[in-house]
Length: 124
Image (cartoon, rainbow, N blue to C red; front, side):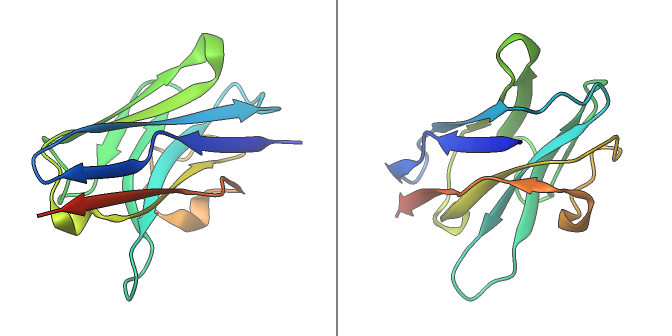
């Protein structure tokens, strides 16, 4: 059974940084996508960043140049480094994983497994 557990959320002032982590267990696919999504009140869930098993990445336009997604194979951990945070980045951030290769898609329909989410709050 695949489990994804996020950590690292919290409160930060605008301009600050946070690093989110997602620990994956039972996730044994050799070809895969893992990604970060966020859901803010009153908005639709949004794909933020994704990475494929070949290391290719994609980002939402709103976070390009500020966020970095990475994956540490040995620990089956996904990271999201978030710098220069803005109030509009505030949301619940979810880690997600696919059953196979998905070309680092930011479409949530491509993902099969989801974590419970971690709250990110950014004050102005």
